[in-house]
Length: 253
Image (tube, rainbow, N blue to C red; front, side, top):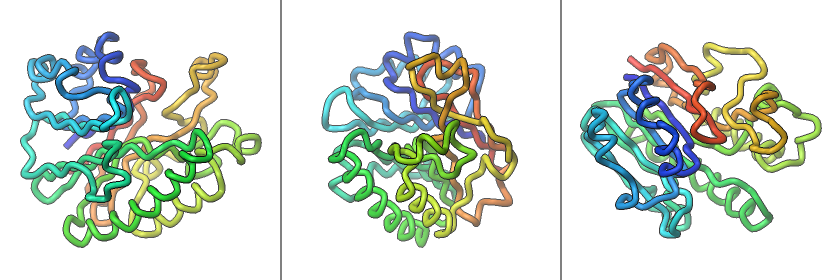
């Protein structure tokens, strides 16, 4: 199973940049989207269907033009779970999960800490989500949580770890949460195969950051330990340019 995760920073904007042409060439079985910034009736669902993605599940935020996640699939899932049941996070449409046989795939959009109020919300979300992920794995152990975590885990994952150490996305408290998330049984699939620096999935629109590769690795495919032996490949698809993020891909047997 080939799974791509992509924070599209607005699905309608991405669709105007030949997104479907790119998708057809990339050809994942399952596409997990974050920050769709649209309600389902605002999305050209027929274009996805025509490209072979018959099974589409959208979990939009209550606030229009904001946040939201989706799972677009060639394969029919056995079950789709919208949200976590935790009201404080669910109104922003940040989690959607599809179960395919014994594998569960979740598209997650973890909040960004753009100001003090949102940083506080982010920390609350992180703690609630960690507890939820532990509980969920009792029922669905073969779990992949992909998406935009809005955190660089280690110094290798950010272009300037010294100067950015007090910036949300690379705060010690955020990185410590990632430590605990991994210790709870998750594996960062990209780092199974690639231990190199300068591997990023997000670049600011300012200052030509992408051209200079002044980036952050915010997007992950995290699998539960039980799936480690089934992960065949995990790469960053940095040539796709529909967003300030680029997609990340994993292949699981």
